[in-house]
Length: 387
Ligand code: PMP
Image 1: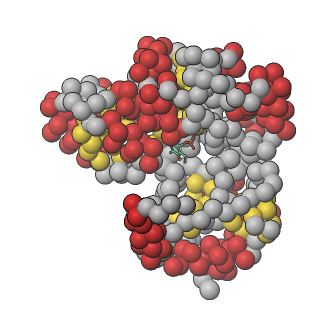
Image 2: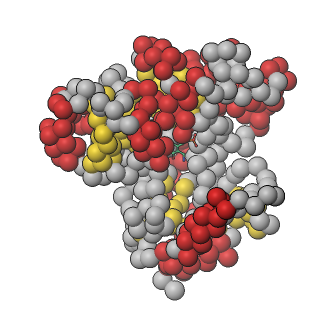
């Protein structure tokens, strides 16, 4: 390759990342997703997956995806506005709207793109974004790209949110409050009804990220909005097809006028190729299963309650979801404990700064975990934690 010094800075940057102990590498899993996986040749009980209902390897999703490929081919060949729109997309959007009890929904190529496209469509340089400090990267990124003024309020702190609304709302054209519902690195949930009350008082829009709530929270699995009984309130619900729905893609659910507006103004929806037939069909099948098999969610919640009770003697962060985190003293302890668990056949990732403010082990539960999986986890955690 021809010499060009313009890229030399990448070596330096990588060295800095390495030196700080932040260098990340991929881990290869070569079988279907499940409660037990083979990771680089080792069989492990998997507590690192977002596949909360155990649907990503389900035969019915695989069949739906395969049939969709047979009928529609592998790619959609263009933007939804040009040659990329299929009946399948329509069916999935109707199913999402029905699950969320909204007028309409719009499917994006990923949850990340749904957040970026929606935030940039809704607000611009004359506007204000009030964001929970622990929001997901896609919400933060969307806010930055939108060019709005961003104020982070303290995590789930309604007083701080209101102080900011009081101080700054009137200086801006529009205001958008943005929050995860289930916080993905902590497992706690946002105080949604009060956030919506504040939004109504101060004339602010609300965008909630239900990536980790959909399929898991609420009686029908519609998410935290349903859990809190807020389905009839004015808000914008985002989610992903890639976690409890076992597929790939993201969505926005809301009023018909909002969805119509996004179809006309969300760049990450307009200028990208329509979601693949396989992903679309798999997600649609997952929503049917969520309706048909509430026992999956019940099973998941039994495991959550069981594990929370049995971890109560350890520094467990407050959680209302399948994400249970053990607070650790430093990154070294987190990495060591994760490695010890792996040596004992259990995969629980260590999450460290700068991703989170303090180090932790992050345990993700699935409906397909068996009692013996949880038992083994508890045995090993108890023996390693106090060793
Ligand atoms: N929001 C949250 C809270 C997430 O955890 C994720 C995925 N990690 C996303 C958005 C992005 O979703 P996707 O993986 O579909 O891009």
